[in-house]
Image (cartoon, rainbow, N blue to C red):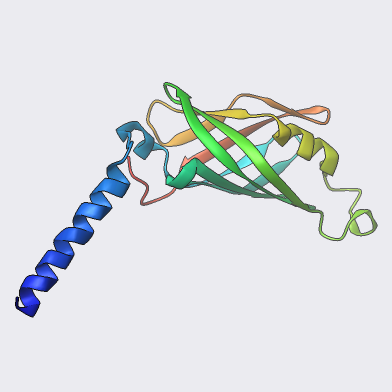
Length: 159
């Protein structure tokens, strides 16, 4: 066989393997959710901005949010459980409080690390808006305040 034939057969084999891996259990609805979303966790007094990355592989997510005195990184799994409802379940929550209480500015808002961990210990729901450009959460109680998540589609996501 010629090198060209072997190259063509190799390309076909790679395509077939890719089709099996990508197509296995694929759900066209999931494409509306996968990728990078930018947004925030906010209440009347505090806003933490960042991103949410939804991965198709093993349905994992990464969320990074950063406020004036701390940052939180949440990783875990996600599932599409009802029409337009995405349920996130955290498996790890890492909090950086930028040096702890000694460096904290009492004039800026701050969320207690324990309250943050407790809030993400339970699954939370994000709903895809009708225009499929925004994910919004139901209100989430953190400490004594009500917060909501809102993430907007980042350029280049599949629609």
